[in-house]
Length: 254
Length: 346
Image 1 (tube, rainbow over the protein chains, first blue to last red):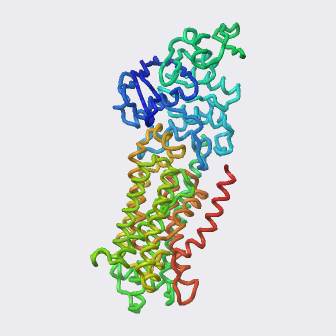
Image 2: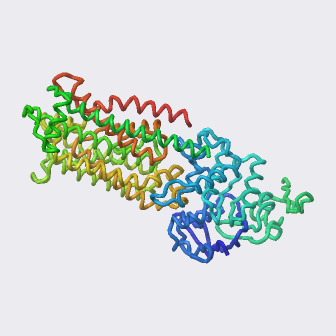
Image 3: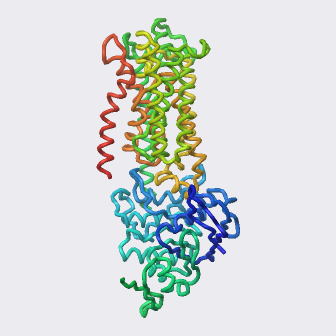
């Protein structure tokens, strides 16, 4: 297992946000985290990259308890793309992507060829290389999101956590980002709202409700009309797409 | 490839800029020594300094020798190091609190220092064992700790820390006013006011021996954390995800800024706007990367403060303005410009 979450609980103040979650992702696979707003997806991602401490339970990264891994080592392995992180500093796109090299650089080691390559490669992958010198605050929401993904890629992680990476993106870039991430061969956990995108791109899915996993497994096992009605409170019709062979969910009114 | 070439260009530009700034600082300090009620030629200054440092024996007017060495040079060095310290504190706080308006005094440090100084000066606390500077230093640290405890209880987000700083400042300013209005006579009140606005007039060599090492040590400590400061651009979570030990860096850097500010305030009073304006000016020139920004800010702060000291001594004949008045006269318009720019970029 690349990432294994075992019976993890976390409370923010008195509110239990993550309530005994167990799940695992195999090396190189993509796990989609689904669930309504406030179901604990973002908190779980934050726990996995240790931005928050678990109250109980263990999170393992390649069999090692993350609580025992020094912060900088952890950052060389796991990259995290937050929702809507922004800055007032006058940074260029390249400046932001270069931040991804932070965990790889020693105190005195100068910026090297490797760093340059990682940054240029990351910029090219999200189709922002030609905008590298543009200022952050002039970018649209979707462009910012792509730059964040590039920053995470420049971190050259073996595990990638993305919190709703397709928010703010137009449909072309939604598909591009997800197909990019899923083709990287990097173990990824992606919190998503769009069930169809989840079905298209993820190897497995976990559905969260009130901080608990209510369903987990392959997309075709997890995404049932009954579950969607129970968790999301909407009626849906599911069929296998004639175009891409994956599940396709259509919502019905009333 | 192009990135590498342009980086080399920038490297040369930076070296040139550094040389220019250092030369400018040397010129400023020389001017600060030369200019005053008694004008002393630069050649005399150079000889006086050489007599003291290299043991040469140029024939000099003893009064000139004394003015150069005992008054003006020490004063210029303290001004330079205090300016560098305050500006560094500003750049560090702006990065960590992610707020363009943060400056050393936002943590309530100067207000606490003032209260401490007033306690010694007017209430006679410390029974003569505490100097005014000592009182100010203790007041600054107490204020910082109080704001730190408040902020820890209030959740540590940058807005909360700033609000706690504002609350702390108000409290200590009120205490200062209370003590001054209830206990001070007119002469004491005038002395306090002068001190509150920043004054270089009491500066001696003993201050140089504190102020210069504090500035250098603080600068090196900040430079050591330059990469962490860069990583704070997107907030504490983003910095932590990049491998920065956020809590440790916060404790260390807040501690350093508190000590630097306390040391400066205890020597020369509270001098506003240097910590606010200089980092922004430096950012215009060298950009946001802290490896360049920290040296630029330190040099800029030093040059600006020595300049302000010269202006404070010559702008009104026969009279010395508090240096805080001069820095604020330049700083307030700059502050307004920053506000307008901040509004535009939203």
